[in-house]
Length: 146
View 1 (cartoon, rainbow, N blue to C red):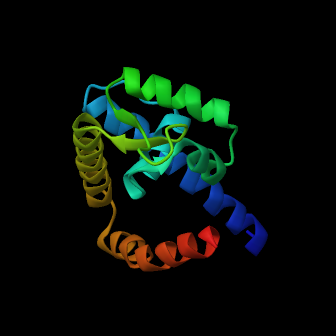
View 2: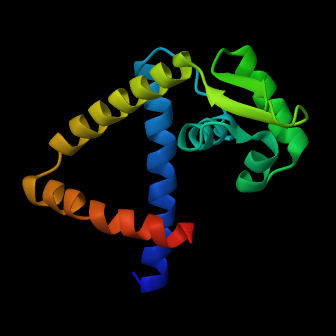
């Protein structure tokens, strides 16, 4: 396999791992899988509590009306709070609810359990190699975020 084919395979594997872990963790938690766009917004709000709807749209590269729809759906689901900025009532600030924090923590626990179980099926050398790659994957993520 050429270097370019290996890089393409890496991208495909990362995407499939992400999708499989999301579905499997939600299944273990007996929850419906949230749409990816909702998850992205929740992760952004978790990282930046009080972010405005306008800034969230810019950061996620989507239209403000799309964010408005996502916010409405997440507020209805009890996962997001929106409040008017006291300094500028036209601006909406977003924060996670306690239910969202609990759901995200529960998801992380299930994801970790799934990965732990799957890693245990690998031979020790393969398991060690996968775990040794974690700092390098973290560096790759940082490079992609620039």
